[in-house]
Structures are given as structure tokens and as C-alpha cells.
Amino acid sequence: MLLFGFWLFLSPRDDGSLAEIQRRGTLRVGLDASFPPFEAIDANGQIVGLDVDIAQAIAADLGVKAEFVNIGFDGLYDALLARRVDVVISGLPYDPRWTQDVAYTSNYFNAGQVLVTRADDQAIKAVEDLAGHTVAVEWGSQAEMEARQLQNPPSPTGRGAGGEGETPKASDIAFDLLRQDSAAAALDAVLTGQAEAAIVDAPSALTFSEGGGLKIVTYLTDEWYAAAVHLRSRELLAVVNQTLARLEESGEMAQLQAKWFQAR
Image (tube, rainbow, N blue to C red; front, side, top):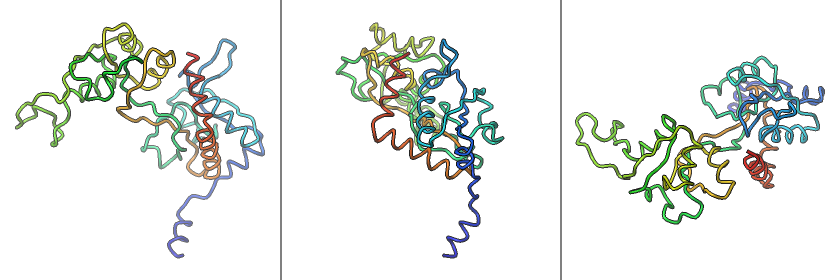
């Protein structure tokens, strides 16, 4: 009981933001409308996208309207801390450096690096099957870094094969790299037969795979997107998580993702 009381004393009290949102009748959502299909401005000047639909669902569950505040990505956290917005939903990667100031919701999208092949490819079912094949990547991207790590995995000392005091060793997975100007070009190289596989970010892969020509074999890394509220907005955090859980469990989240990636 003493420990529980001490925890309550140290825990920040709720800031009343949920009650204020319901009194005001609007949920102010911070986003940077330059990141389709998550958020963008359409031909009619309206902000649309996957994150917009998620925000609309949260607002509907609260019985209020969603009010979108378009802010440059670098200013989103500042706007949240300055109380200009109630929540940030904007393709926002979880960042542990911010956890002393903001509270993240449950994850709702994995934007990590993925391995992609043609939809009819039966030869590459795992990373190990890349041996002897050509893998397309965007030049200088995270995808290229992941591909290089597969070719030359780190040693137990963390210095990689051929580090100081080590004998160079052959790669566990030997494949050729085809460097392209963009993730889209890397995926197109797979479609046109220039490469058997590609490594790209999940949003790019989903955009192309929805057309039926490509498929995601596996995720190589995780980069989770989540919404964020002020650290003291504990009641708001709880209701946002409830909506995210509802969308996931009902299958609506999958439907929304398919809708927006097919629309590109």
C-alpha cells in the first residue's frame, strides 16, 4: 500500500485534456500533410489519408469532431507540448528520447524494411534464399544498409567481418546488389526482371504489392508508428488506445490501410 501511494504521488496527475476536448467539441490533431498516403492535401484542398481516417475514428468515439492542424514535421512535438494540439497522428515513429515529455499510444503501423519478390516467385521464401540472386535497393538508403548487413553480418565483437585482429570471412549470404535511384525504381526492377528481389520500406512495398505484381516475403526491421499525446493526458491516451484496439480487432485498420495504399 505504501509503494502504491508513493507511485500515485510521483505519477503526474491527469491534465483534464479529455474533459476539455469534450467540452470544446473538437479533437485537435497535429500532422504534417506532406506524407501520402498517411496525410496529404487533395485536389480540393482537404487533408486526407490513413492517419486522417484514424483520427476521424478517434473523434467519433469521443463524440466530437476532428480538427486538423497542419504543421511541419519538426514542429509537431513542440505544438503538442505548447497545447496547440491534443494529439499528434502523423506517421510518427516511436522515439524513446521523447518519452519524458509525451506518451505514445499503441503501435498501429510497421514502416520497417521489407524483403519483396514477384508475387509468383516460389524460390525466395526467406532471407537465406537470396544467395546467388540479385537484390535491388535504393542507393544510400536504409535498405542498402540492411542489404549490406545481410551480405556481411556483424561479428560477435561488433566490428564486422575483417575487423582489426580478425580473419576476413566469406559472407553467409552471397548476392548481388542492384542500386537504383529510388525505392520505386528498385521495385520496378523486380517487376521487369532486372532483380529477383528488392529491399525497401514497408509503405513503398505495400503501394506496389497492392497491384498484385509483388509480395512482401518478410520484415527485416521494425519501425513502428504511433500517435502521441502530452505526458499528462492519461485519460486521453486511454481512449485513443481503445479506438486503435477496436480498429485492429474489427479488421477496420487493415481495411483502411488497403484503401489508402491502393489509392496511390
